[in-house]
Amino acid sequence: MLVTLDGAFAGPDGHSRSISSPADRDVLAETRRLADAVLIGAGTLRAERYSPMRARPDAVAERRALGLADAPVLAVVSASLDLPWDLPMFAGESALPPLVVTTRTADGARLARAREVADVEVLGSADLDPRALVAALHARGLHRVVCEGGPTLLARLVAAGVVDEADVTLAPLYVGGGQIGTGAPFAAPVGFDVAHVLEDGGFLFTRMLRRDDATAAGV
Image (cartoon, rainbow, N blue to C red; front, side):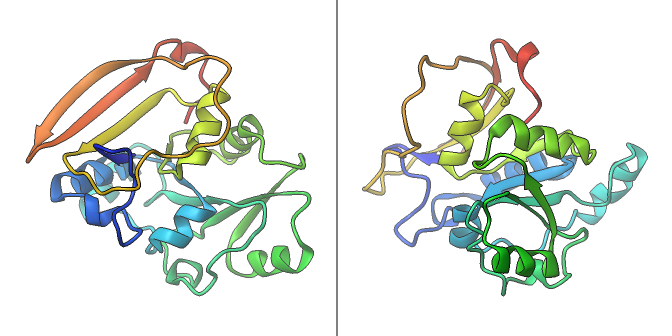
């Protein structure tokens, strides 16, 4: 995740790239390098307009040696299935078909559309239960899951105890209109310990591990 000094996760243009840096994008690529899946919410997909998911050529050999697919699967969580189906990622340009995760209450017509252009996982619950979501990914062999937001999805995963590592970049910027809204407050804070801190051009790159990560379920 990337956040500014005043708690914004996107710049005035509504995109994270405008508050990012080359080093931040290198860190993002590194977190994806050996991932089985990149997990995002529908709002993040609509805002960021994700490109087709492909691995860097220099990472493919390493991934194959470890028994991984050539690239991560992009998994999009959406209860409404209000997604930008015109994106190239839904036109067969990703290394692997994208995965759309929804619920049994999804609209039938939108569900049919999703199945035309993506692999689809329908959870049995009426809402997107984080533990059921992670279990469904694991059942598909997707064990190393990198969640790139949005903030509401990430907060739900943290509250459910399924996040064991947080990689957060602090951008040395004020953009106005900050303070990220993530839904209802937790019953109790969830603690993380600092594992690494790096700096480049004023950007701080932090890696934090959940204190009770032995109980986490693997995002």
